[in-house]
Image (tube, rainbow, N blue to C red; front, top):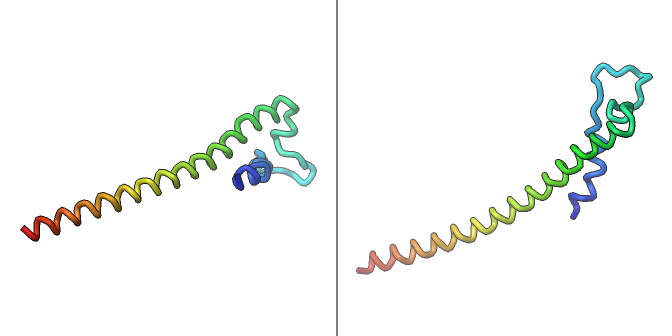
Length: 87
């Protein structure tokens, strides 16, 4: 949930801007384009940022589960090796 709090900050930082902006251009292109441009831009940017957080969390969960499976496999292989060495 901490990622959801940072989304508005990241969204405002990703406002498209022209690199050749003059000091009189105060607003980014997305805002200057009118309400439809702002809505389009928000529809594209917000889901990307939210989904990045979701994907990151799910990757961490999957990595933890894979680590547990790897440890279990190692323990089984080690036990099998010790049994074979005993025979």
